[in-house]
Image (tube, rainbow, N blue to C red; front, side):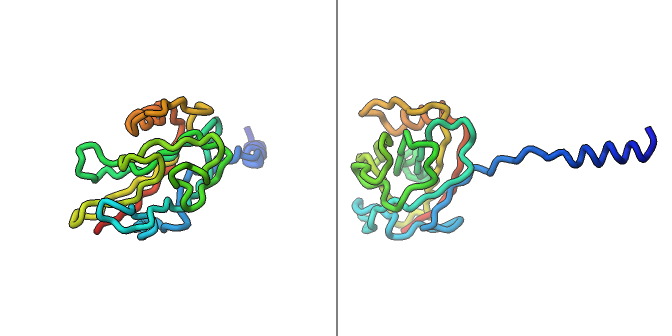
Amino acid sequence: MSFSLYRAALLGALAVPLPACAAPFTLSSPDLGPRATLREAQVFKGFGCKGANLSPALQWRGVPAGARSLALTVYDPDAPTGSGWWHWQVVNLPPTLDGLAADAGAVGGAALPDGAVQGPSDFGARGYGGACPPQGDRPHRYIFTLYALKVAALDVPADASAALIGFMVRANAIGQATFTATYGR
């Protein structure tokens, strides 16, 4: 092949549009910056803590193709329990949703979309339970994770434990986005 034919073939190949890359699956909060410390608004009210117990506003983008529902968890791996501490779990969020307003985690779920189900926090309520690490502990990590699920809904029993919900979420996940905030007192 002559150089001019090679060059024409190469230029022709470069002119073919490449498929668009999917946006990365990301989760963030306008209430918290990257590597943020939770504010008193997100701290539990009780157990010696005096916060407002409001879940932060959350936003996400790049939900993977094929997601049929979303699930959200907030987990503290540093809690001195031997198994961490579940602060919030929500399943059966629609995949078209792009965020949740502040205090969407209120007990009762009035600010959540129809069909969404809140699992129990380790505080015992079905709703957001804010940060409340033991006095004097090093700051704890609060891992916010949004999962894209391959099922339209998780059929979780009304008395499902946080561990069971976590198992079902992970067993059906096709993608996840996460960020971590900290808090100590």
